[in-house]
Length: 273
Length: 234
Image 1: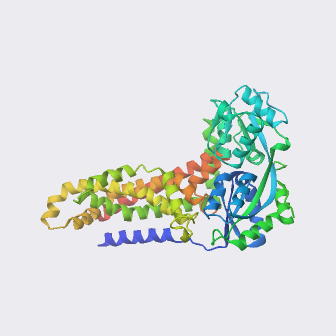
Image 2: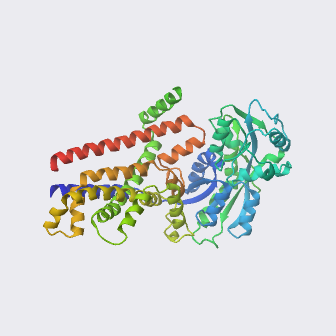
Image 3: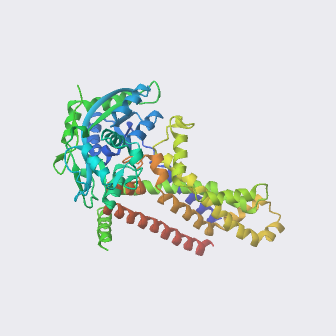
């Protein structure tokens, strides 16, 4: 009988362990955002400041822009913080978002082998892409409907390269996030379009470096949107709005400008107030 | 070999420094996976025992089904649970998505077939050995299943450990239903995935070593407990 009692008390102890401490009620909002803001460390810098100012915790789920917007469409986020203007405007037009506000920008860069076999180096993104395609140099694409993927497809189109016809072994569609795609590019010594923030904080660079940068077309705007409470009644409207108000406020914008890696500023605040 | 030296040193430094964030992540991993394994045992062991001793139509189909479900892809389980728990899904009103509870549910679903299938095997072996004896005592099949479960408790710990191993090692399901939220749903495997995608391979590998060490420690404790219990009450 002692055995049975011991067995039962062990079971009870295990379930207690499982049940405790998981539920600490706290005030929080859920923000669906992109891997670039999370992995560059920007949120790690911003969120403690916001929490201190407001007492509200922010839970960030980092996905590609397309996925982040879908998550909000399903009602699983209070605020979206992403970078694909066309997709964001569509989101608003469908009635899922209340209003889009611009927050900051950074820029895209083309990363590639330092030896630059395609001679793509320079300032012109479209010319760079044409040269990569001309010699069929290996190019890694996110292929995951993220904001960066959408931008990449726009650049190919503007460069006059018909990907559907020209796609071959040189164009590697990886269907992965920015980091994994950079890992793939590093191991294949391939070209890739990346956001500067993720690149600066990325450590496994192999033989890669920046090949194309500084083109005004490479401008990458981030927007913030409150999910429409009319679509999803449980959206934390007041606290979500507080976060948006803070991030476009002088204080929030200053915090964005102050975030640096290796002395280099990653994001440039440009909210309209 | 120097690729492995740096992670080993990093792993040691992290452990030696008793890093608070790391401790939180390890504890959350353990809590989620232990709870999931416990649920899987409560549900899966009786199912396995009944499949072993029971006689009912469709039993063979169920046996094949549970054996097959041992290979459930974590990503698919994650996606299914995500769609169930999402606000737009049937269980959305509970607001469980992106919580440790959601991760426990997903891992429990993943692990239950493993526990059930392994339990069935253990009990089936016992059943063929003690069948006549239990029958002569006039035990019903349900009663026999319960007796054999209790009798085989030491062997069944292996089924529980196999389930726990699967739970703590998987990343696909917890990533989707947990969202890898810093300080809330970030566990060992999702941290490793995150550091890998940041290109910090030495840190990712260091965390991997720590995870392996934790799993080994749990198994060692379980093994020692089993030996001790068998000696005293076997």
